[in-house]
Image 1 (tube, rainbow, N blue to C red):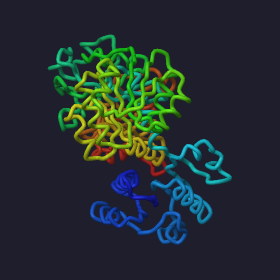
Image 2: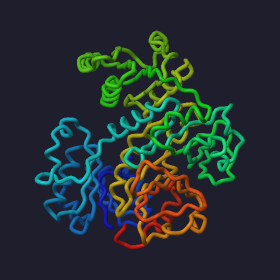
Image 3: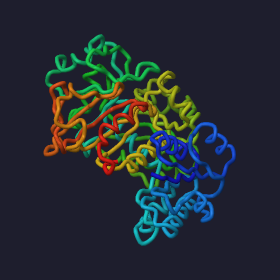
Image 4: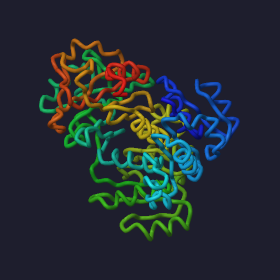
Length: 458
């Protein structure tokens, strides 16, 4: 597949890296020389210096043969014009654009077939905010991801010191919780990422990712020895687009008590007008005295979502020290994301990774329903429909030579998407079953080859 990626920022760079690593023909368009130099040094892609909204640049990039255009510059206008030119010049089969401006998003008619004919428009901030909302709904969780149309949830939480699972092997999970349908699919231990097998031993403070039915998801932290209040007292630092969106969504749900702290007085006035139940406070979220006055020690969830990543990190650490139960921080730089678990922040949410996840899910072809990134992009979760011709169908799992660093986390019947099957050596996957596979990034290609079988599927 030939793909043109416009914009070599964090999203464009990551998309180009992923597509290139999978053997795709990638052309990257970028104007800034420093980003061009970085790409040349680190990625095996063709790069063209120029504007993605220039017809000549797109022709030079080979627009007439492109199967996919992904426009993810910082300019909504450039992204939209690039897709418009792609449509008028060559009828590119698939077009994706990153669009942030609410005025454009609300006027969605321009994305339709008679106009831009976009296949997917990405709003990184909204994608990140939606992920935060999912996490908030499970007290004590560090991450929450939906699968099978929301019928299954993956929940990440730390094992408490007094958890029944400490010192136990993952294969003993069913004996410890016989009434529960739970599969542990990944473990984050310090800087080590583990895709477990039956003999893997669990340790206190492991960040454990387990999949279960959605109706039981709120019980997982408790079962794993993690506390978690259900009173939903939340403090949000930063009343920008993300903070305002979060407050609006949370105050509409019963039991949520929300405060927003924002520096800009005009923004505070605006938020106070549009929010009904949220308390809006004008002030600096890094001010310890202010946080104490607003009873940060009683907060069940503390969320820092300003446009300053360093401030988000420092504010979250301060709130944690003052007694906030769970701290969520908006962080996008890869070098910051990699250190989150070691400095004490509970949850880091990245607009970049949220966007990349959505784009890669769309780009994958065939019967892959979703692709989600976990643990700062160390693990991918693939939700797919098992095809009759696939290597994983019709034989016991014990007979399948599954790649090391990958695990089948859940299987649901094609006829009953709410019924989860705990995989065992005797389990047989049938055609039409939905299968969720978790794998280290280095193993993804091997997993996809097992699912591929026929070229038209991928």
